[in-house]
Image (cartoon, chains in turn brown, orange):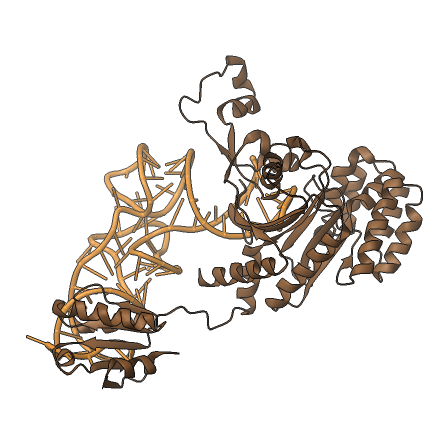
Length: 429
RNA sequence: GUGGUUGUAGUUCAGUUGGUUAGAACGCCUGAUUGUGGUUCAGGAGGUCGCCGGUUCGAGUCCGGUCUUCCACCCCA
């Protein structure tokens, strides 16, 4: 929890340095908000909530044959699958109160009905930052800088920000004439790092790409060299594609603003709502999948009746970042939250005095724990020991009489009788 | 959704071809020390062997079902 808080606080801090404020949306959304936004596979992974009351009401005999019919009748609500879609809904519904362009960050849990495994959970946090209501490429630039700031702060130095543009990919599908298979194409090339070129080509064959197209696409996917060199190459390929040229123009603009990213033509992303820039952050030689992903979506609010609103954002996978930090020992070691001092007392008669001293110390900004039960001193010291509390103040008969309280140093075992003021100066850090 | 895997004390795990009273380590409790922890020593408590059913004279052990854990695939953060 300490480490998670450190992670979240650091990220929040950087988000606000970039001018984002927090919002939250409910965990539960109506199914029509969630359905159809994440592709066919995504729809299956949405957790559905059974209707309250008599959920069998309205089911016809004919429905029983098809699961999807029953499903939609007995479950009208579900747990959110990501933060972007609920955000789009939020913006559409509150358009009268929101001034565009609007930016926000959102750190909340999302749920996926998947089998959990390493680096992958049914319930996990996402940290999203999004701009909405602006087409400016400055947003992409800011997001790249922000990502850079975050990973710099965490000292994850081998992180790479990969950038591509869906319009370029759309251009490719236009030039090689398979626009109708565009979504499948994205999912396939997204896997190149994982399963390799040969298997990818087998999948291309399955969606009926010609050998010639596959060869040419291979050349594109395998392009090496600088961002500029890749751009020059793809420019030639896409001369006849209007949408392709748009994508190229956007990347060009971005390259003028920053060089902190790697232009990667094999980056595609699975989610179907991205329409333009797409980002992903990966580690150089780590097969944990991406630790950050995002992109620009032009039509997401349109489904909720709010047209011509373009948004762009990125999401940090903090569970995965957590694992990497843990593995590499990158968490600061001064995170421990132990209290500065424990006040222990030898009889119930001294509880009043203990609480009085506790308050005095707290006013001096000292973290004080007062032992909550009238146990043996032995117990109280054990408690201090197990909770890593460095000092214990012992209050007994002698201490009350002399107004000099026993301060025991738990590290070296020494103890002295001191006045409250002396204790304060000893214990403050 | 597909294939595999796991489940025994608070925790991590042993447990032989099915055979008496299911063990260890750590943790917990008590005492040695009635005002002194962390170290040491002596003692103690703690288990419906995931759940349901079956085979057997007898099941932690074998069989079926179910739930759970973890892993791979699909997909994804």
